[in-house]
Amino acid sequence: MPNTYVSAAEAMIRKEGGRATDSRVRILALLLAEDQAITHREIETRMSGQQLDRVTLYRVLQWLADRGLIHKISSDDHVWRFHVNHAAYAHQHAHFKCTNCAKVVCLEDLASGRQSERLLTLPAGYRFQAIELTIKGLCAKCV
Amino acid sequence: MPNTYVSAAEAMIRKEGGRATDSRVRILALLLAEDQAITHREIETRMSGQQLDRVTLYRVLQWLADRGLIHKISSDDHVWRFHVNHAAYAHQHAHFKCTNCAKVVCLEDLASGRQSERLLTLPAGYRFQAIELTIKGLCAKCV
DNA sequence: ATGATATCGCAACACAGTTGCATTGATTGT
DNA sequence: ACAATCAATGCAACTGTGTTGCGATATCAT
Ligand SMILES: [Mn+2]
Ligand SMILES: [Mn+2]
Ligand SMILES: [Zn+2]
Ligand SMILES: [Zn+2]
Image 1 (cartoon, chains in turn green, orange, brown, cyan):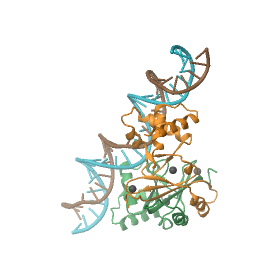
Image 2 (cartoon, protein in one colour):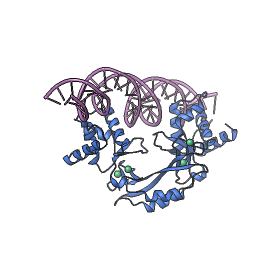
Image 3 (cartoon, chains in turn green, red, blue, yellow):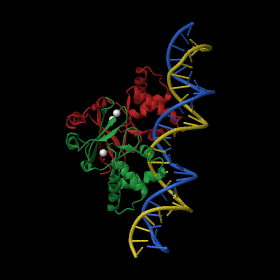
Image 4 (cartoon, protein in one colour):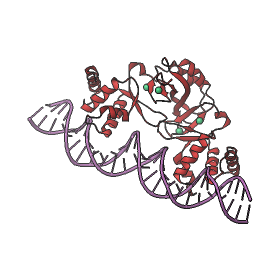
């Protein structure tokens, strides 16, 4: 874990007014270094060796998500995946999931989402709030 | 449960070459009578009183889904919902989920999906297979 | 350094979904 | 109508993700 990720993580956490604990810093640094969205289990594995309870990991992830430093991604395998909120993902965006290796990546800005909102007609009396769009397919390694 | 749903269910099951057991017929009849997508738990509750093991319910639902008589819908609460495959839902279609009461309904044909496929650009080397689109908002009762 | 309290670690729990296996029952052939 | 077949069921045990309560620990302001 390069030092720049660690100090960036610590800065982000302090900016939110939270305590910069070892767990928080290390978890966020790991996520900053990751280009794809990963599961609680995957983070736990990458952290093995270091002292870190699984409940703490759940709580840290929720804390980071509540403050908008990361976002949670739902999936059809019913496991949450987590990814840092880069500037490009500040707004609603679509996700891609590989049907072979389960890799999940964020797709930049959801221009199509806005269009879908107009094209899809909701039943009468329904109110639109948000759109969730996942593309399924094969990633470059699995094609 | 009106008799027409029961006989329709039995006919659908026999057409697939499966045994028309009480469980299958009653579960499919219940789904035919339902306009929204419901969970395993909700089906179990509506069936209480009648003899039906929860594992059997899981297996019947999977059997019906494998044969295309119903479809499974994934959701951010990580619980599957099930809905009969009416003609209008034969193709890919979007879903609506109420953020207040968790009601899930199918939205007819995904014209916008085809458009989204074109508008969203996948990373180089990725192959498109399918699109999953969920609109979140408030249903008519929760507005 | 010290105290207040946010955070952590542990144990127990909740709940959706799965698997193995013995028993039951729907269908088929006589 | 009856028996044979084997698909489907019921039950018990299990898996995996995620949650809750609470006493112990560590961070940070003073
Ligand atoms: Mn994302
Ligand atoms: Mn549907
Ligand atoms: Zn892949
Ligand atoms: Zn509602």
